Length: 414
Figure 1 (cartoon, rainbow, N blue to C red):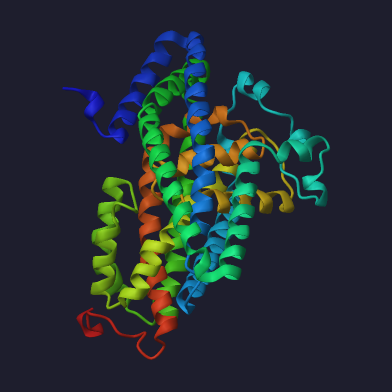
Figure 2 (tube, helix red, strand yellow; figure 1 turned 90 degrees about the vertical axis):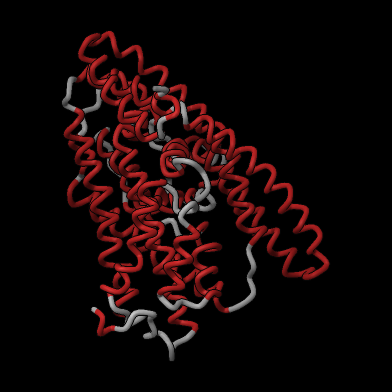
C-alpha cells in the first residue's frame, strides 16, 4: 500500500493523526519540527506570487467587454462578493473565533507588534515612508502592478480595436504558457502540504497539548457557518425572490454537481456537471457559459468568505485590533487575491498565504490551519459551484425577464 498515491486529503488526515501522536511522544522537543512547515509555506508563497500576477493580468487580457451579459455578470459577482464580506465580518465580530486559539510564545515573538501591522487606510499608501512603504511591497505590489497593467491593456484595446487583436493573442499565448508552468509547479508543491501538517500538528500538540483544538473547531465552524449563510441568504434569494424559481426543483438538480465538487475538491473540474445542471434548469447556453466558464474566475465567494474569516481569525488569535477601514482594505486584498485562482490546487490556502503576507500577518500560523483545511477546501468548492449556477440563473433572469419563471421541471412536481 503506497500512501503517496492516496488523495491529498487522505494523506492530510493521516499526517494530522501521526503528527498528534508524535507531539505526544516528543513533548516540547517537537517544537523544532515546526521549522519544516514554515519553509514549505514560504516555498508555496514564493511560487504563488508570480502565479497570482499572471492570473490577474490574464483576466484582463482575456476579458470580452462586449455585450450586456458581461456587465450583468460583474454586477452579480460584485453583489455576491459584498455579501460574502459582510457575512464574514459579521461572524468574526459576533463570535470572535480567533480568541479561542492559544498561540505559543515562540510564534508570538515571530509576529509583528500590533502597532506595526501593515494594513493602512491612508492616502500616503504610495509614499516611501515607514509602514506604508513596507505595505506596498511583495505580494501587494504584484497585485497592484497586475491590476494597473490590466487596465492599461484594456485602454489600448479600447482605443485600437481590431488593430490590437494580434497583440492580445500574443499576450494570451505567453500568459497561457506561464500559467500552465506555474500550475504544474504549484501542483507538485501542494503534495508537500501533508508534511507541513504533520510537523505543525506535532509542534502544536508537543508544546501546547490539545488546547489548540478548541480554536480550530471555532475556526472550522466560523468558515463553514459563513458559507452556509451565503447559500441560504444570498443564493436562495436570487433563486426564489429574483428569478422566481422553485427551490426544491433547484436543489434536486443542483445536488449532482454539489456532491461531485465535494469529492474532487474543484469547481473547475465540476464544470461539465455544472453546465449539465444549468441545461436541466432551462438556463440559456449564453448565460450558462458566461457565469460558469468566464465567471469562474470572478465568482469565488467560498474562497473570499473563507479568506476574510481566516485573516481576521489570525488577527484575533494574536489579540490585535483593526479599525473598520483596515478591515475593508484587508477584504479588498482578499477580493483581488481570489481572481484567477480557480484552477490552482488548494487555491484557498495558497491565496490566503499571499493575503496574510501582503498585510504583514504571520504566515507561520498557516500549517496549524491546514489541519482542518481539507474539510473547508471541499466546502469552498461546493460554495463556488452553487455560486456559478446561481449567477447563471440570475443573469438569465435579467436578460430574459419574460421567461425567468421557466424551468425544465414543473412546479407541480414539487
